[in-house]
Length: 162
Image (tube, rainbow, N blue to C red; front, top):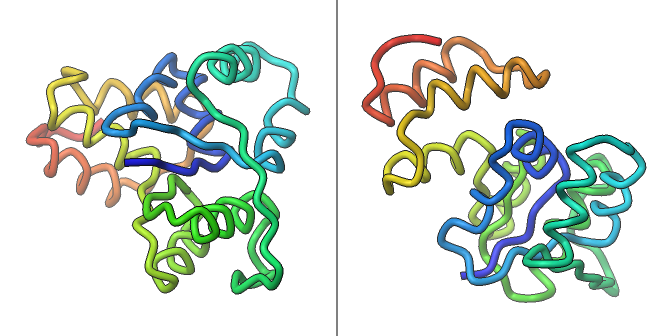
């Protein structure tokens, strides 16, 4: 399986030292050039880790759709992820933005977000705890509602709240 990734999940997973989780279940992880440019504009340890991964397993890709079916109301990065996935025949996209996830789903793609990646990692035994990663994400600046956290913790069989 191949996956096309957006900036937010990449940055957040890099900030908590879990960037490698993007590779879980994927033979290739593709990042549109537009998204990579968003990331490298911020010169911090997360962007350095991402650039390092770029040389090893994160593959920069560029696909230009002749005519986009993605609404212009989405951000440039989200549009690029969805367009590249459609253009390259890849079903799975990793996007946190809710509006972009809905559009991706309407267009026949299978969106997964940062929390979905963490949940998959927990359910396959790659990480021992989702709650610890959620705490780290919150500390890194990701807003998560209590309802969403409780839903993920239940799905991970970690009943207690963060």
